Amino acid sequence: MNKVVSKKKLEVEFLGKQEDVLQGFSRRRINEEAVNVERIHFYKTDKRVNPKQEEPFLVFPGNVPVLLSAPHAVRHYRQKKIKMSDQFTGSIVYLLHKLTGCHVIAATKLYGGDPNIDNPCIYKEKIAEISSREKVKFVLDIHGSAREREFDVNFGTNSRKPFLVKERILETLELNFQSFGLSRISYDYSTATGPNTIANYVACELRIPAVQVEINKQYRVPAQNPLGFHRLLGALMESIKELAQTNS
Ligand SMILES: [Zn+2]
Image 1 (cartoon, rainbow, N blue to C red):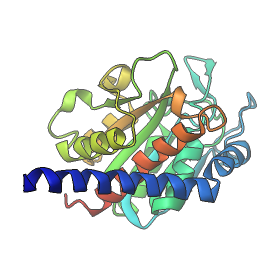
Image 2: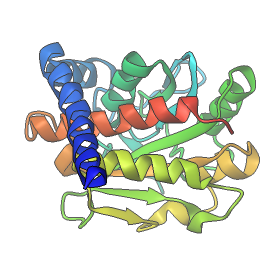
Image 3: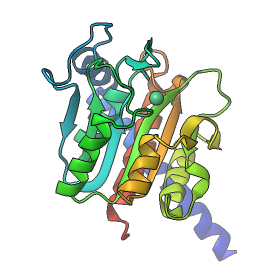
């Protein structure tokens, strides 16, 4: 009997924590901030820049050992065709840097490449440079997926090869996404298994556990789903905080 009572109490406290996080985002008007950040830093255009003349990436050094990446934050080239951006992924990593102090890299310009396909790849070289300079224990590579997909989030794990993804990183993500109500979780749904993905490169070449996180559009557009955007940010923020404290 006592056990049941104490379990209930724990659940209430657990939900209270999520509620506090969501209220904090409301007070801070984080959705308006996201819209502004997207417009200023991740402007969508077909104008191409030469990466030798103009820096096509934004890098924010952090103070916790987690690196977030948003390679498709703006339009990019794949097989000589311009592909649409993964909308709001740039704003998401930008805001998480401010909220948690994680390291961040994101594409801000159409420079002629696709960081999740290219080899060699100036974006991956930048990640190598950051992780040689800073302490980085985990990398989350943030992407978007279409609204029609039947998952809220897909974790690309390269079939969970032991040296690529530590179980800890997946457990942390699963628990936090579930507790913020993004419970339709899928694994290795799409192209996350290609040899040149950022997650694979980071895991295989840099030997840092990495997961490709693909977020359904339903949760990425603040104006269309204000609470959904808060829930998504909450799930990622708490995951980063926990991963930062994990010993690995
Ligand atoms: Zn993408």
